[in-house]
Amino acid sequence: MTSEERQRRRFSEDFRKEQVKLIESGERTLAEVCKLYEVKRDSVLRWLKRYGAKKLPDRILITNGKEYDRIKTLESEVKKLKEIIGDQKVQLVIQEEFIRLAEDKLGEDFKKK
Picture 1 (spheres, helix red, strand yellow):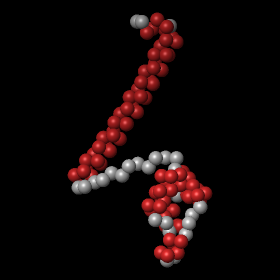
Picture 2 (cartoon, rainbow, N blue to C red):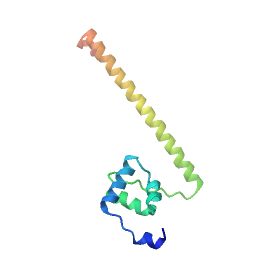
Picture 3 (cartoon, rainbow, N blue to C red):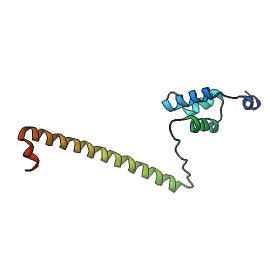
Picture 4 (cartoon, one colour):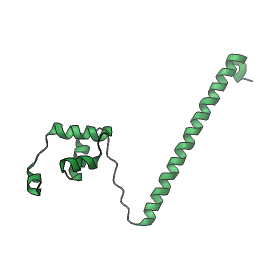
């Protein structure tokens, strides 16, 4: 398809919404839609912004390798902290269950002791 033919094409609103749903559901990637229909990436991003249910993340401008390394380090720290928070939540649930079981066996005065 020539660039002139591509410029004359117009996609209906229903078609755009359908492609956005497929991308958001994970059935297709943004790159697949671009390649399949020969649409520029910026156009599909506009569709996602206009019709999508999810907000697109802001772009991160990386000016040098140090910033990239810093971002990767911060992302790994966030991941570790989320794991720690998850572990703490599990421990809290277990402790609450132990207290409930102890109350069942020893009575409600267990908390006071």
